[in-house]
Length: 219
Image (cartoon, rainbow, N blue to C red; front, top):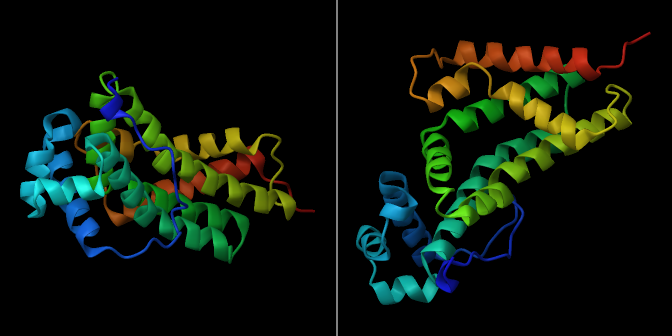
């Protein structure tokens, strides 16, 4: 990969506050619409500048190159979407199964959101040509989600509700369960009922299945 396609390595927590920069946000909103419409390879900095209604000079003052801009967009989208998961994990109100089911529902809704689906498709289609796209998506998106789930599982292990030896692997299992039926079919544009009732049914099923896998029987 050429030098100007290198991705930044600096990252921020999804719930960390970044300084408000209206011009930067304006560029990111323009970039979001162009990337989701044309994919990574099909998007150009000229298109993004035009969509964001800024000059190319202003665009390059904020972002070094297209890869830098894409990475910032993925990070920004992930931070916003993951904030509700952080809030649920930080509160931990309710019993273990209830919390797991609630996190599963929030995660499923995040994966089924229009931007979440389109972003996933961009990564899958472009990753063979731009491997670092997958790295940046994992770093700022899916990897952070797994860390949130792991934090939740560790909490309930400490409180004696779950018995888990490898919470990273268990978080991956939880993630996989959340993607059954609805998410996989929706990603392939197959007909599927993604109503609130169905989402809640899958989420409750995930919580039930996970307790059967790792739940500690109550005496």
